[in-house]
Image 1 (cartoon, helix red, strand yellow):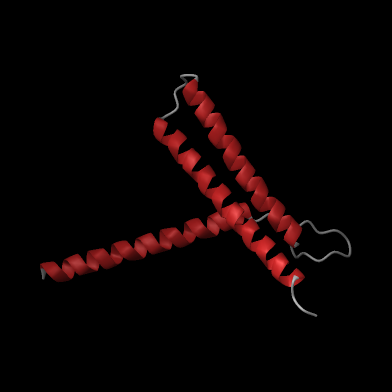
Image 2 (tube, one colour):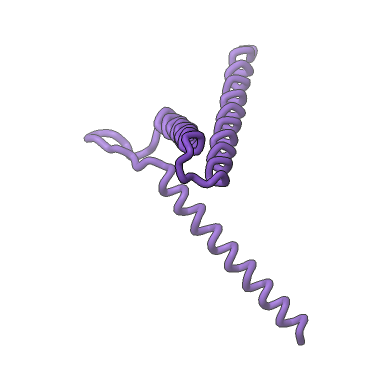
Amino acid sequence: MVRSNYENSVASLLNQIQSNRERMLAARLEDSVPQPKTKVGQSSELSFYDMAKSALDGVNASAKESQALREAFDKGEDVPLTSVVLAMQKSSLAFEATLQVRNKVVKAYEDILNMPV
């Protein structure tokens, strides 16, 4: 009896976590993907340039936010250390991911360039 209640509560908790995760991912995707700007005669699809620029702008914004928080903490303002560390880690992770994507793109370009025709 206790075990079945425990299993039901764990399953319920896992379902709540999964639904919250899906909502957060959907909200993050809506916020991070810019809406296409359509002009007369243009399609509403995003180009690779627009997506890459949006991603790089996000990484840059993360780095600037991290720097601003760190400077505020250094000046003695009321900024929690945990916020500073989290912002720095997010910035570092975003930069490392961007660097890995760049390396993959360069490698793919080199592979295509060296393909025998």
